[in-house]
Length: 194
Image (cartoon, rainbow, N blue to C red; front, top):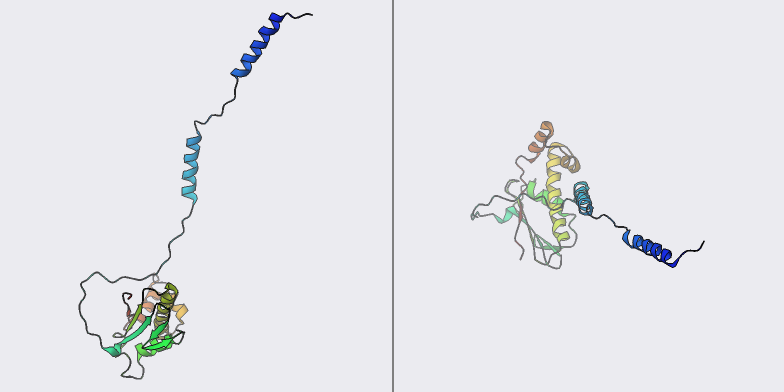
């Protein structure tokens, strides 16, 4: 069988035309929809980290009044920019004994004239300079609060850890909590840094 050149040319051109016409394509019309659905899925499924910080209740915004404070009712702790402590005028490197000192100052069991007149009048003043590292400031604040927690716990016959675990939503435990704090306010003055 002999094929003519016209026949071969005709079939070659048809083959070539069909080959160029059938280029595969990827449908991208729904890609935006898929990306949007994935975005929504990840936004809903992701848990965001909660910010941690100091749990301090700020006083109400009232104009300051000059209330004279007797020197004997003020226990001072200062932290300089070199992260050195000055407790009641004495340099310290270790704050661990301060808990017992604060308890003795606030409660004043021996009615000393160098300590607070009463627990309700005792004020613990904490002041830091601008260059102080946060860890030192927070460490001093933790020691002050621990002293108060130990006083509250001792008042109702618990440990300070047990006192901190009291559930304020439970009426019985809330009564214990309030009776421990009665007449013994946590008076902490945090002064503006220098």
